[in-house]
Length: 254
Image (tube, rainbow, N blue to C red; front, side, top):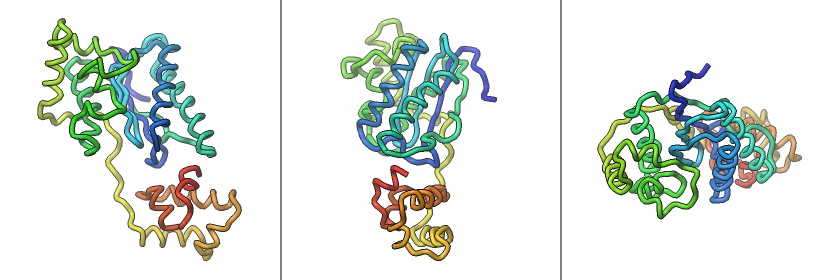
C-alpha cells in the first residue's frame, strides 16, 4: 500500500509501459493536459506543478473531495482510451500502478517542485527550466506567459513572500540554486541493448523464421511477436523498427 499523506499533498509519477513513450507529438501532450483539467473539474484537486516528459509524468497535487487514487485512475483511463484509439492499438499504456510519495513539509514541497521543473534541464532538453513547454515552470516564472488556470501558483509563492512580484523573484532565485534534491523518481535507466544483441534475441522469439517472414505475417501474428520483442529489457521502439525493418509507426501502434 502506498504511504498516505497527512497534508493531502502528493508527488505522483506515471510512466509508459515497458518505459515506452507516452507522448510522440504535441497533440499527445495537449490531450493529457486536457484530461488532467477535466479530472480537476470533477475532483477539485489543487495542482501545484507538473512536468510531462516523453515517457513519464510528474504531478504535484493536493487531493480534496476525491482520493489521489481516484484522481489518477480518472486521468489514466481518459488518456489511455484516447491514445489507444489514435494509435489503433489495444492494451495498457501506463506501467503498472503509478508511484507516489507524501509531501508533509514545506521544505520538501519546494524541493520536489524544483526537481520536477528541472527534469527537462537534467535531460538536456532545454537550458532553462522555464523554456520547456510541457511543464508548469513558466507560470511560476512569469504568469503572463502561461495561459490557463489549472495550476495554483499562489500556494507555493506565498511561502517566499506575500507580495507576488517579490515572491516570483525569490522563486526564480530558488530555482537557480545548486541543489542535490533527492526525491522520488522513475527507476534508473535500463542498460540499452545493442542491435547485434537485439537481433539474436529476436531470432530466439522467431524460432527459425526470418525477419522477412515476420514482415509479411498476417497482422495478429506479427503484432504478437512485436509485443514480445518490445518486452525485451533495454530495447527502444525505434530500434525495433530499425532491426526488423518493420515500419516505425506499426511498432508504435502495437
